[in-house]
Amino acid sequence: MIETIYIEKKIKNHPRTKSILKKFKKSRFIEIDKYAEIFNKRNQNFRIQKANPNLILAHKNDGFVLRTPEGFGIGSSKNFYFSHMYNCIYDCRYCFLQGMFSSANYVIFVNFEDFDASIKNVIDQNINYKITFFSGYDCDSLALENVTGFAKHILPIFQQYPEVEIEFRTKSIQREPFMSIEPMENVIMAYSLIPDLMSSSLDNKVPSISKRIQVISDLALRGWKIGLRFDPLIHGKDWKFLYEDLLEKVYNSIPLEAIHSVSVGPLRFPKKMFKDIFNLHPHEPLFTSPLYSNDGIISYDTNIEEEMSVFCKNLTLKYLDNSQIFRCYA
Amino acid sequence: MNKSEFLNKMSVRWVIALKEEAKVILDYYEMALINKKTLYPIFKNIEETHWLILSGIGRHNSAAATSYLYIISNASKWTSWINIGIAGSGKGDYGNIYLVDKIFNQNSYITYPATMPKSNLPKMSLLTTDIPITNYSSKELIDMEGSAFFDIASKLTSKEFICIMKIISDGPENNIKQLTKLRIIELLKLNLTKIAQVVSYYENLSENENQIKEKPEIFFKISSNWHFSVTQLSQLENLLRRLKVFCDNNEIMDLIKQSKSSSSVINSLNNKIKTNKVNWSDI
Image 1 (tube, rainbow over the protein chains, first blue to last red):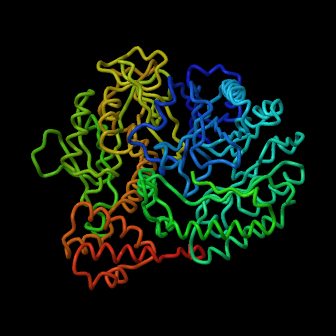
Image 2 (cartoon, rainbow over the protein chains, first blue to last red):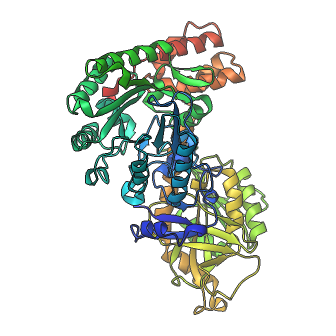
Image 3 (cartoon, each protein chain N blue to C red):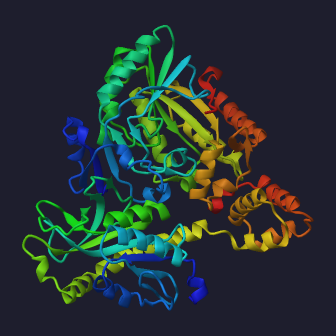
């Protein structure tokens, strides 16, 4: 239940605003000038807001499509991302959003058509490159699909450009609109997964791993391409056993021909971001791990990162081709 | 719980304009005038968890009193700040209490309180004016202190720790001239249960934050036994927070008992972290 919805005056009559507001009949609506009046102001506490977040409907003015950070991608020569939303309904303890924003309220940008134009523009400007778009870098791309309808809106654009890939990365068990439409070869449904035991401690408010695997399997059988994102890799006692269990379970539940790619990525935070997250959750067991500061990045020891990545890669190679496996460093 | 256990556990600071508005609160939370000469009347309970200042009417008084109480009561960053009082309204129901979720003043400066308690209390916006207003028109709540209180309190703590509650005392059909001191006390009394429920949320919020943010007790013991630089103290605090998740104090003291210097203490604690493998089945 969202108690309060803040609405930028500029988009209060936007059809998408009206359609979203219809879904929250009991909420209190407050008109605002700019979402920045509420969102990410100084002297806010992400952890406390996360207990009872509000929703902000806003207009995004610029920066619709951006290049991904170095080391983020699944094989294309150019990678871009866009976020129709800031923040996430889940509360994962390793999530960078809790260090990036001081506010846990959800911001939904309702001017999807401006995203469309920017995406088309980027495609036109990169006609000679293999490019991939990532939806929902600053949020979970599908977790609030039943409210925003963003995936349903954006998919037809990619129907026009079958050579351009789009990845929807999620931890949700959202099946629509994908079960109701014909699968598209250039769409990757990517799922972030960590072992069940770790997930039950770290992935707060997130559907269980088994439920996620069930949805992955259903979408794969429907014909959608699947991305498996073992990112971040989490260390701990019996990590080999836990990851082996997870990977075997996944590879034995999904038709392998549906798997587009697998990526493994280490747990990494920029130093300042880690400091903010640690201050929010100083008693979090994840942060009792052997984490080190190196060149402004907090991560596990390189040997641990390497051992975990190689272990997961080797297990994956039993099922998939080397060309389908990527290491992500961003 | 004895007094020392209560201290620093949770803390609530009240800024209230009139003594009639404060009376019910003072009685309920058992606060008494402090035995000290102060610029504004200040009250506190025996445990010193609740403090209340009578600011008088107006934005300047409210701002000054909020700052003054912060200093006098040694409030922490996780102190909850509450402003409660009567308000005029052109929209709400006479005698009802409302949480404030939007504050603006006649200069059109608008602020928004952050996350609020999950409560059945209705919410309204608040206009803070410098002169009494009797043209209520379509205004939700009107007072003379709220915006100044919020501006200052939000410099002292995170916005989630600030709460403004208003009880409607006058409006188009309830002439302010008929408002008596006794009636104000009565209005507060009628809403006391609701007030206490909201305040209980802020007490818990403050207590939880204190538990999260307070330095581990062992930090003081170790820092008094070795000489640490400022940087090392920060390292020590971080290491101890992490170690406390999986080690008890005795284990930590055992790790460092042979240490000859502060660097050696830091190294020993670091080594313990370095070899830790989180046991996810224990969590």
